[in-house]
Image (cartoon, rainbow, N blue to C red; front, side, top):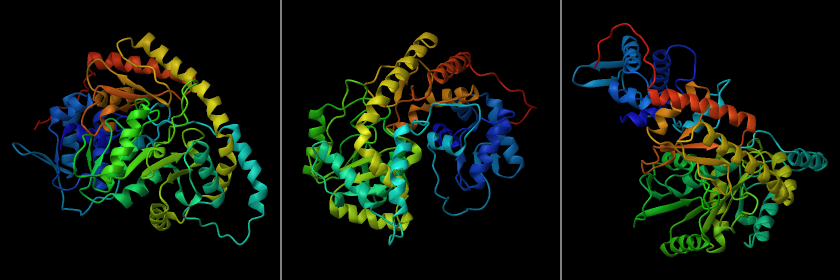
Length: 463
């Protein structure tokens, strides 16, 4: 196993209490017991793993020796360190994405700048729920299972696309439980093991996880055997960039000519700053473009309402898959979303000014306390794509976590193996929290530049 590979899978191993070697051993122990590290798997050498984690070699040696004493790993001179025990079959499905692990393993006192979404429902959402309560009280003859989505919301989403210049009917809309379920459904329906999926580098980590879970081979260069293309062209995650319209047109046209499904992820399309309007949907250039949308980023992640716009035939296929998963989404949430959609532009405009102020504040604080870092301004979105002058984002993220701030290393967002000198940092927190986060990042960077302190352990045999 490559050191960086296991580092990404370790997640937030160092964020608990106690000596680092105990925390590292505990995380590896859990991965072995859960089947994430199968019997016989080769673990990285002491020095290589220590360098990747930005800890002293003695930390790794002590952790390995502890696990060896428990019989979970075997260390032999000349053959390295391997997971012990009998083969345990296929590991359970899991995720290695650091941002998802932050959600699965929340920690008090950590400023979370890794997973980006509004941290509270807006007043407009509360009002929308109030408006739909009378309608909810009058429902009868409806068991509430709508695998394609509630008809009222499908109509509202179709109306919104028409207002953006894209003719759409309700039967072209499948409502999903957020954008992530939309990606999962599309991956399961369109990708087979070994299929080549063309993506951007870097890109949204959740898409990479969805495609990898179906056994896809991810690529960033056009090839003859591509089975699916995926892209974010409006306020890109993580860079914040907007793809020029001629390039969007060419991408849609070339995919249609080649007969390759193209997914246009528009989850962030309503997040432009003042003076930076959303571009038209890429599907205006080709009826074959599949569009993903969501209210998680512009309204609130807890609403869990997303959708797919595609041909009626594909929507029918996806609905059959959705039926097996959960029979359909939460009806009150869908009714509230339908009531909210006509006012979405006003809500987005109000949040745009606030996000711009937070964006400017974070950049100002980074320039003040971390002047060697580069954080270019963006026209919208939620994140800065930060360049650090040396080292790598993966090892620094572990140091930052020990200082109480969580950031997302760029390597986990780049299937081409690049972006190791990058961090994704969101600016949705309050200005006070952003200032505190940068203070902690500056302290972490000072420690990182000076190299982390070495823990003292009893003498052990090294392999």
